[in-house]
Length: 635
Image (cartoon, rainbow, N blue to C red; front, side, top):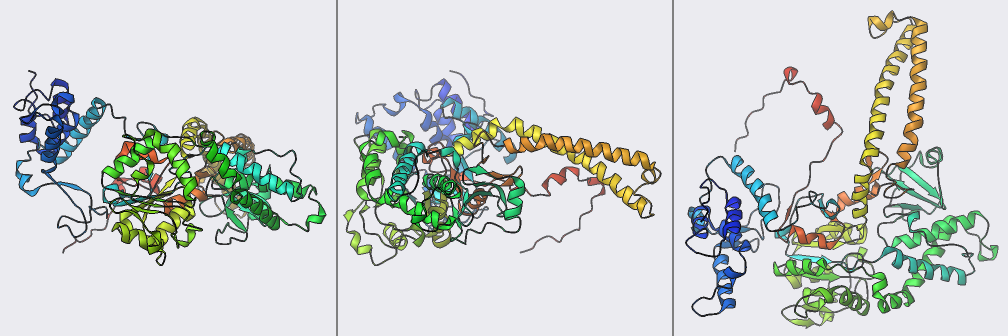
């Protein structure tokens, strides 16, 4: 039998055991790993051994019983921090709860024998060997080293192990719709309602590329704008025509977008806003053209928005749209085979799962049955995944789920009478019924305000935003990388040329004032030579600008030709939407099934945030640096 190197780390030993046969003998490979490397290695070895090992027939000749016994033996070697009253409960060095963490039992600590060397060396070696183990197990590389667009991105550190309950929205979260199909039909029914009211809609067609999530409707001026994180407007469209930078400066140069002014600004923070925005901008064109009959009354852009919103609202409440979707779900729903497995993993890891949705129960059941039941094992029904279901229960999520009037299901008590909870706020009901509170709950939804912001601000729940466009966004950023690099290079070159021009301009200014220039060479420079140099530099910068302007306009066109990237506004800054996501969503991702790769035990750590002065650290001269001495901290 091949011999394992005594210096081999924990993960290396597992790979060795897998490659050289770990199930043939208790006194062979497994015994040294168990005794020398501790119970964590034994657990990992058990995870990679195959059929023969699990089905070995013991004295009672029962493979299933033998497998169950082995699992119990492994479980006996670990403790799991169950709640905050557990003696091992703590807050870790990143400020996260350790609830749900697995620890080696105190009596077994002495038997754990790690490889010799510093912990830094050991961690480095084990990390390398861990990548080999993942490859051996055919587990895809962790994003972004795998598929970047399927990553889970972290704004605020989140220990998923400490999460006891996960609440899910349904539409565009647990159910992914074909946006063009769903919003296209909503648009069609909305336009039909406008036509019945006498509005001229003939010749208009649904154009999903006209808008993107995160834009803001200016109902006072009939504009659609894209703002940066500070509220400055960077791009704008009046009706369906893009507005020049000069016009943007004239209109918005003295004001910022303020979403608190709901009478003027309407934030497109969900894909359900797409059809409404397309309808409104097209009708702004008709209003500007004078095509709307005067008998419909005097209309401004704000009152026109109310007409459009009412027509679309009727399309939703009349029931024809949902009836069409229920009858032909294959046209509108995009099933994801990995999504039910993701929820199964979370459920089996002890998470309590909730479904919280505005949709009525019949619609919810039809959609969930179509999207989930075909992928669930052992004839499971989609409802078996959830500890609590609430449907047709929230008229406005922004009011923190005030009334629960629908089905509530507790896995251990069966179907409960929801009327017993009607006197209490539903958030309080959820926490009391499930025995959780505050940051032990993670809420997952697609609406940046009613799903994510309100859960964060009012309930202190942890939050995850589902933004399906992220997959296109990440891919577009990759495709546009070379274009952006060339653009940045040109801008940097212009900056250097501009610096020279500014120095010459200052020298000329001082000369005209009868003062010496910055340097002797600038002071003695011939006046004509100085003017000619400045003239040449001006011409050069003008030509560079002529090259930069269309390149900057095209930046982000792989995502959307009109609006550019979802997450950016201008070349350097974040969009208003991205600022909202960072502020209110602890993590964000394109779909719920992305959790499958990361497991229910993932510890998400936020990345370093760049600051304006970070780039200057490369210029720092340590030879001239002086640091004040600080007294050591004493306790």
